Length: 274
Image (cartoon, rainbow, N blue to C red; front, side, top):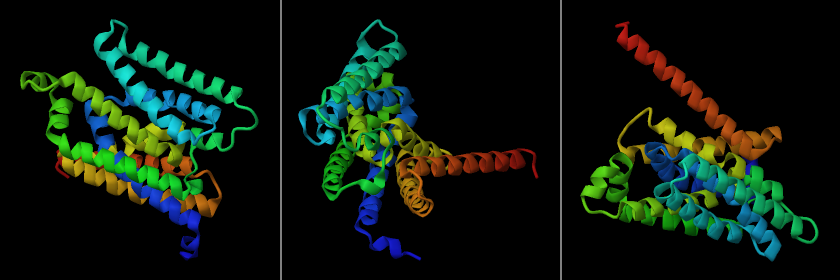
C-alpha cells in the first residue's frame, strides 16, 4: 500500500510538505489575525519578477525570488503606511509590476525556461534535495524570528495602537513581519506555486481559528492541518496522476468547508437547545 514511499521524489515531496506546513502554519496565523491576506497575495504575485530574473541571470530562480519577495514586502509595507495612495491600489500596482517584470525577463532569456509552470502552479513532486535544504534554512529563520519577537508580533496583530503606546517601533515591526511573510512565500512557491500560495498560507490558519483563539494553539493546529492535508494531497495527486499543488488546495478547501459547515450546525443546535 505504501510502496510509493520508496521513491526518492516522494520522500522529497513529503519533506517539502512538512517544511512548508511549519512555515505557513506559523506565519499564516499572523496573516489571518492581522487581516493582511491581500498584501500577502501581492507579495506572492510580485515575486514572479524574481523568477524571471533568476532565469535571465542563469541562476536558480529561487535565489531570484528571495530578494525580490523581500523587496516587494518592504515597498508594499512602506507605501501602505506612508503613502497617500490607497493601500489596495498600491498593492495592485506593485503586484502587476512584479508579474510584468517576470514576463519580460523570461522573454529576454535565451532558449526555453525550464520548469516555469512549476513556479506558477507548483509541483511538490519535483522538489529536489537542494531546495529542501534551502527551505529548511528559511524555516529556521522564520521560527527563530517568531520565537524572539512573539510578544511584539502578538501586540502588533491584536492592537497596533497599544503597541505604539508601549514605545515599540510599530512600523519597523510591521515591515519585519511582512519580510517574514515573504520568506514563507518563498518556501511555499515550489509546493503550490505563486498562483495558489495564498490559499496554503491562509486556509490552515483560518481552519485552526475555528477551534481556538489562542495564538500558540492556532499555530500548532495550523501546522498539523497543513501537514496532514498536504501529505494527503500528495498521495491523491500521485494516485490520480493530477497536479499536486491544485490537489493539496482542493483537499484543504474541502476540509475547511466541511469543518465550517459542521461547526455552524453544531452551534445552531446548541443555540436552539437541541
